[in-house]
Image 1: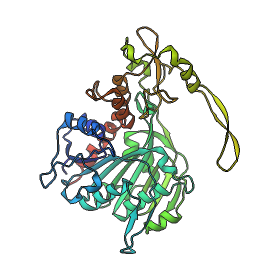
Image 2: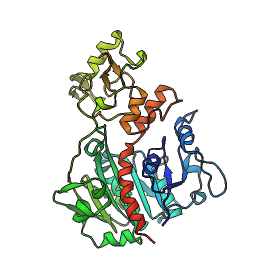
Image 3: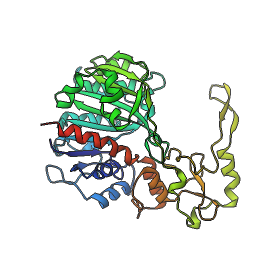
Image 4: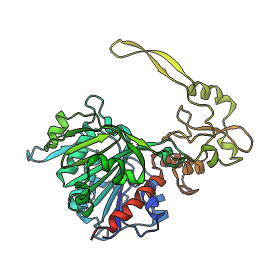
Length: 404
């Protein structure tokens, strides 16, 4: 089987870089990256700067267009579909034209992935999302992930998933994300997994367990998804755990006991004597201390209900002897989540540099050079930890090698 990839919601190329580092022959046939409302498509241009453009089957270069306007049939065939898509409201309804059709909310990007699976039927699919996907929405916990699994089952795919804290597996950032590996039931891998007990898949034999080893899993829970996706949207709720398996709508899930590895420490990625522009100024120091500190603030809802908003302190400055915290798109702005460190050269308080932000995600130094600093931080806050992709890619190498 060919090692070909289509990458959706590509950002600055974390998935592609992760597979390229394997040097095992993966080829990206097409990608898509478009930032809604942005006049300058910084991430797309960064991706092209590193990897070049990709034409579709009609010879058009539409990698920087809104994916919803791109005909999925024009995308080159591929073995593996990858993408990091936003966590949104995935509720659906029947279409007016046909009670058999479904219609998701406009702008929800899961449906673009589903459309690509329908059009191109790739053997495998590897997706990334924030870990709260398992519990959203708050009023019907598990519904959104249930819709995704129901869609995959309807299209003839099974799935494995795992919530990974990147620092638990050797990275420099405490970043929790869910990875979803879907595979067509008619593949060699699909037929093999069908014969293996769910607890064995989660504990040792599945892709996630091989890429991110565990000592074992806690007792399993299970449920069955309705075949009608609209019914799932209207009625389904379930407490998904951090790892699981779905086959033909039957779901098994459990908590894994990870074999935690030593992380890279924040101090190991810092540059000494950063540029003066990254240092905190004395006039803002009081504000930084307030934002990072513990708070108890009386508040009143629109309905007149009084309550106390409270939050604990954030380490200030961030310690060198731990991995970094989760980096957000707001990194470097004056807010509670921004990292503040002591410069290794002079001990003064400062922000992370753009290069340090790239290192926190596992990119090469100056990967985003040429952008304004604010966009460099934004793109890194949107990115994934590259080494996590490489770990899963090694297992995928073995899986694809077994296919005809």
